[in-house]
Length: 352
Ligand SMILES: [Zn+2]
Ligand SMILES: [Zn+2]
Image 1 (cartoon, helix red, strand yellow):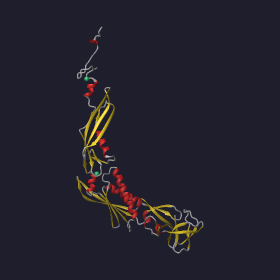
Image 2 (tube, helix red, strand yellow):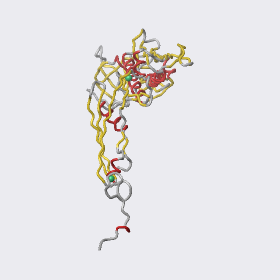
Image 3 (spheres, protein in one colour):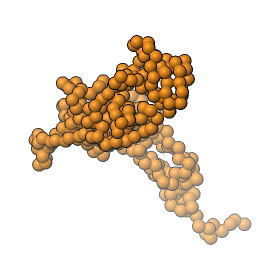
């Protein structure tokens, strides 16, 4: 007896004619489904000088190799069917010219219970331009000048190096934080100091306040109208950083005690008592008017001949006569030790 076919719902695929549960069979359904959608072309805009990339109208720092950048752009441009399971995407890139690349993309996975694979090719074009930052640097653009000067003296070589290092470091970190104009256009020695010409007013102010914090002194900012852009006034600022008269290593007397200048912390001078090593902070203006009695740089080597609790006998480094000096509480010494001493008035002081 033959089975009665009329009771079983049988359907055939309208495309290939093979049996199918309903409508197109999975094979034909798969054939008409797009698993991988690819643009014909991907364009990358890169700065010819610094290599940064224009993304949605904004220049961004690129910290990966160009190949990787292209790879990511291609990968980001393709769409994969949401129902494709265990999708595995492969991208291979080959260079076809100085600014042209070809990317081959393939995807494999499972869909409708079948293994499926699809491929596409994407043309990649590099457009090299000058970014906002590089074109401004090339055009000698600047918004601020930080002038480093001393009061009644020139900045020392050490202060100048400190200032230059600080400026370079700040320019780097501000650039990384997104200030596109955080660059140093020029550092030029001038009579009595150095001028640092920088791209952004913000960077100029940061450099000036860091110098003020670490080297002391005071700040004065002035601005000048230099033109208009898009209906707005354009100013250029000049910030004068006037370093204090006293420097590190200067020995002064505060309320009868000998102190060595150690540096500045904002508006305070940091001093160290030469006889007990104690730290003192006094207003910078108060220190600034004191007479410099000696400087650490003028210290000479001497030797301890004898020592008791409050005094030491040392050899005068010039005359080699034995002389008495106060014994500093914070320095460990014993007869025979070599020490640095400075002459102050007609006596000597040991330095730690
Ligand atoms: Zn079919
Ligand atoms: Zn650039």
